[in-house]
Amino acid sequence: MLLAIALLECHRHATKIKPARPSRLLDGVLRVIVVGDSLAYGSGDESGKGIPANLDEELRQRGVASVEVKNYGVPGATTDDVERRLQDDAIRSDLYAADAIVLSVGANDVFQAPDARAEAIREPVAFAQRILTSVAAVVALLRSINPDAEILLLGGYNPIPDHPLSKGISRYLRRWDRMLDDRFEGDPLVDVVKTADIIDGPAKLSPIDHFHPGAAAYRDIAKRVADVLLAQFQTE
Image 1 (tube, rainbow, N blue to C red):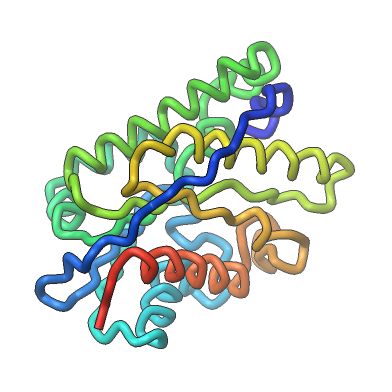
Image 2 (image 1 turned 135 degrees about the horizontal axis):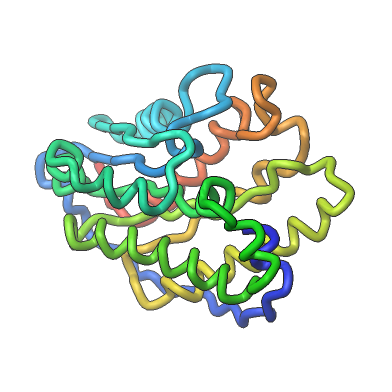
């Protein structure tokens, strides 16, 4: 993805206006599903918590008495993999009952797909747009399963902050996040949750694989997700 967005033109970024919605928690339980790739799964977290367990703890600490967070992340999952996983009846049932869905997807379309990097170099703009279209297809599938759930789409981060081109990579990631913002600007139930400023250096990477976020970064991501959720749901 980094190669694909390197040559993209700058996108104008307009702030999305999202009116607060009244609570839909008719039974008093905030149900959140985390789905997608290794970031959703929690790869690299030396504490073993990842986003789901950290989010559960964060919401309870902020006064949400009844929380249910389920994790359907799979390391290495591409957009196609996630779409196939969403055909599972048990997962669809949980998604249908969810108040919010946290989605991380798209990065592995670069790393896992055959010849993807060559295509990214050859046709960077078209390649980035194709990934964006694939991400949007996953969001559309989630929306077809649950028309009312808040969808929190995780933005990109730089897994190689010590690379000589790190500053350029970070600029490109910010541009990718703006592309996500622009794509979903018209959907009041989709929020792009930025992570690049959280995972902003080697200290925030996993001591296990030095690529995925470490425990502290996962906690901070969960806090940011909680910020968005609590801004949208009026809980008591």
